[in-house]
Length: 115
Image: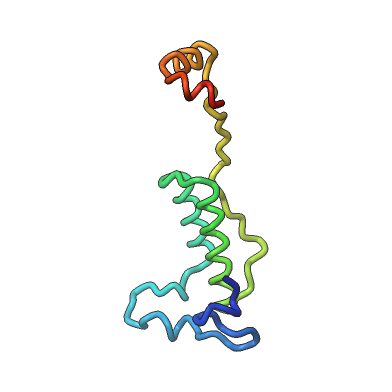
């Protein structure tokens, strides 16, 4: 679905609602008051404490950058060094020859013949 077919998406070149109008002012720490250093600390927390996958940390960073630039209308700090989770390299599970023979030995003959 593109922004053209999404009724809730803002039209291009139309100002969006400011974050201060969306978030209640009675909240002790509204997202409009988040500093770049607080977000950096949150990224460290995601990596070291929550141990999220790299894709998750990348998604959080991209979402926060979008919020920072488009909703808060702030320039993204170029000097901000964010940490991401380390990529996980997993080898696929491969059956040994003995395991394959054992599986084929217990399979009905019509399964082997149709292959």
